[in-house]
Image 1: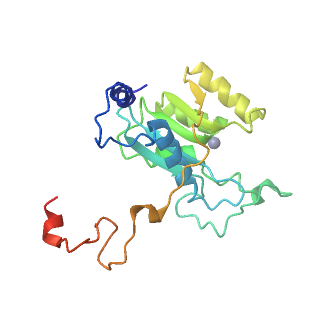
Image 2: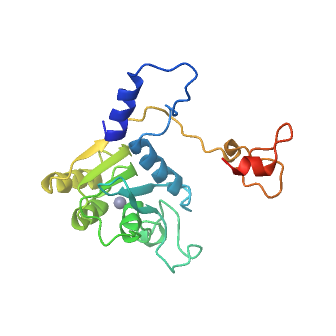
Image 3: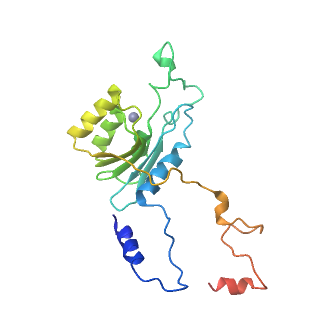
Length: 211
Ligand SMILES: [Zn+2]
C-alpha cells in the first residue's frame, strides 16, 4: 500500500459529510497505470504475431522509459521478415527484432535506470534479462508467463535469480482498461478541446472563466 492508498483508506474511514463531493475511488492504482502504459505502447508494434510493451518507472513513480518490440532504428521494417518460422532462420524476425525491454531501456529519458522497476506484458527472455541486469533495474513486474517452459525463460530466471532481481506477476484487479476518446465530453463547439462546460441558461463565458 503506497502513501496515496493509505490516505485513501484513512479518508474512507472518515465520516462522510452529507452533500460533500469526494474524490473518485476507481482511479488507476500505480501498478495498473504502468502496466496499462506498457500495453498501450505495445499497440505501436508492427509485429503481426506478438505485440509487447515495457514501461520503466523510477523510485518516485515517474516513467523514465517506454518501449515496444520492433525493428532497429533506420532499418526499413518493410525490408525485414516478420515470419515466426521459415526454412532459413535469416528469413524469420528473430535475428532482427528489438524486444520491448531493450527499447524501453534505450529510450530512457534519465541518465540511467538504476533502481527502477520494469513493467512488461511478457516475462523477459534471457537476452532481455541480461539487459535488465546490466542496466541496474532492480525489480520486474510482468503479466504473462506463457513461454515459461522454454529454455530462454529458464535461462532468464537463472540469471535474474543469481542477480537477485525479484520478478513478480502482476495481478490485475480488472481485466480491461478502456480508453474512450469520447469520455472527455467532446462538444459541438469548434474551438472546444473537451474542457469547456457549454453555457447553460445564459451563463456567460465571463462567468465561467472565473472558476
Ligand atoms: Zn527479450
